[in-house]
Image (cartoon, rainbow, N blue to C red; front, side, top):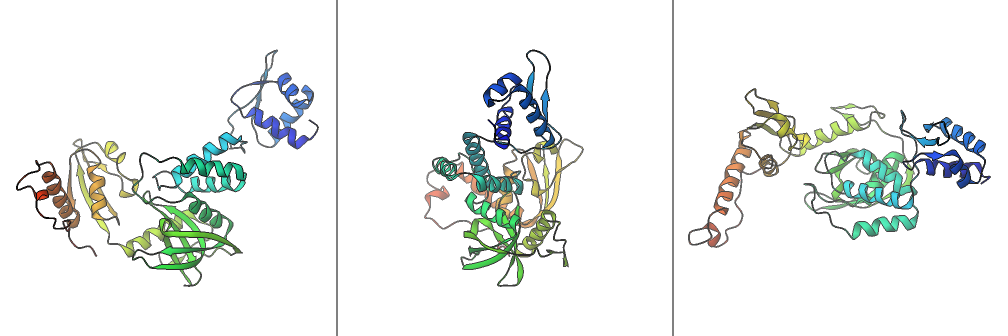
Length: 352
């Protein structure tokens, strides 16, 4: 194989399999001399690939972990497997699967040949996950389109459905994607409205990049202009501030009859970290903008005794929910609420 770049790629592909390759076997596979293999290994090292050599009659070469992540070569099956896994995770705003995974998916799908992209879509469409996150399901192609446009600073057009069902067409300069653990949001500058906006990604439809480039604007945070280079931290703060304006804030004060580590492992991180109370339990004091109904269910799923000391609307909802669950455990018969004519769902306290 006389083409040096092609030979280096082939050599790298062989070395990325988890085994040690004797120099003679590599030379035979690539149809070159052992001396050429040694020179090619030196070239890979110069490019940042940590290739380790062992001496002796059975010595050889193998790729080891280095201080930095070098580029990887994937075969068709590996590329499809990684893309399917990233799509499955990115389609649900699972806590811990953040913007980095979406960027990786966008990079991978950008270079996937059409035949592999078809296989990825076919596999995803033919499978249904057993469990889903609490947030709405999102088409991963929407996420990758938004992520690619944000990275490339390219204007986007998309259809958007607001909370009250109003449908509009938007043209934006995307800034960052932010995951809250429940949902994905796009922080962007709305060109037509000449102002910054946050968009729930599960309400975005038919997004496409226009090809028009833009200079990144400084994101205003806490009433002042931000640093256009700061990125994710400012975007998360901007989103949190926007959500506080849109929804009433719940100031949580909850005691749990279990160690703080046990509780923290079962609560979404954005609800805060409980502190030990010194008696084997722990206490959570934090704020959130989630609905009392959702918070009540998440507290119950911790699977230990707990007592809510505030806010009052959460206490009221838990009382209503607890009574309903108690009635659900009663035998169905005369006098059971389920046997009476349907009166509609119980109404909790009115929310602002």
